[in-house]
Length: 384
Image (cartoon, rainbow, N blue to C red; front, side, top):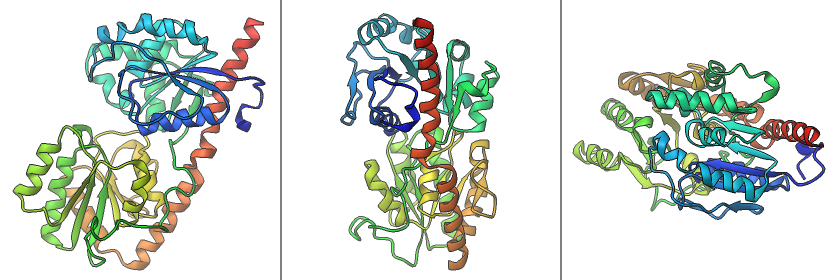
C-alpha cells in the first residue's frame, strides 16, 4: 500500500465523480487504486468510457448522462442517482471535479467529507460564462472539505470564494511519470513522420477546440514559414475545429509542411515529442499543462501562451518563450529556428531538470493522498 496512506489501517472507499473519462481522470483513478483502496467512478457523461478502468475501480452505472455543455438543471437531474450511489457504495470520501459539474453535484448531495478538484479552466474561464456557473462554483467550493488544484493561478481563483487553510489544499502539477517522457527512445517511422533532420519541427498536442486556439497557431505558423521555409508543424489531435483546421491547411497550400496524424493514444506521444525540435501551445487559459510538462521532460524548448500558469514554468528567453498573439508566436517560432545546437542542449537540460524537481507525478501525488487521509481519519474519529 502507498506509504502516503500510512495512518489508514483499512481499505478506503472513494466515490469519484467526474464528467469525463480522459487520460487525466484515469491517471488519478490508477493512483487511488494502486494504494489498495476501492474506487467507485460515477461519470456524469454516461457511456463515454474510452479505456478499461484500473483494478479496484468500479464503474457506477446510471442513466441518463448530461450533455456537453450542460446547464445546472441538467446536472441536478442526476442528484437522486448520486445519492443512490452514496447509499450503495458507502464511501468514506467523495472526490469530485470539475468544479461546476461534478463538484456542484457532490455539493448538492450533502455528503462529507468531500474534496473538489479543479481542472484549471473551470475556475480560470468557466466561472465567468454565466451567472449559473458562478453560483455552481460558489456552491461547490463552499461545501468542500478539501480542495485540489495544479497551480497558483487556480488556487488564487478558489480563494476568492473560500478561504481554505493550507491544510485543506493539495496543490500539485498533474505531472509526468518518471521515465515515460525522455529524449531517448524510439521515434515515429519515416512512413509516419517524413520531415527530415534539416527541418525545424514544432509539435502541438492540444485538442482542436476553441480554448486551445489552433487557428491562431496556424496563422502564426504560416507567417513564420514564409520567413523560414525549414519550419514544420506537427498537429496531433482532433476536435470540433477539425474542418476549419483542414480548410486552413489546404487553402494555404500547407499540406506538405503541416502533419496531422490524428488523435493518438497517450503511449504513442513520447515518440512524437522526440521527433520534434520544440513544443508550441496557444491555449487561451490553462492550469499547469501536462502536455507542456511532457514536452519539457523530453527536453524540448517551448513556446506557449503568456498566461499565469505558464509563467510558473517558463522563463522568457531561458527555457522557453511566452507569446500573446499570432505575430508574437510567429516571432518566437523564428527565434527557436535560429537556436544553435549548444543553446538547444542547454535548454533541454534545464527543462528536464525542472520537471524532475517539480513535476514527478509519483512524488507529487502524495499531497492528494495525505489530504484524503486527513479527512477520512477525522471523519472516522467523529463517528467512533
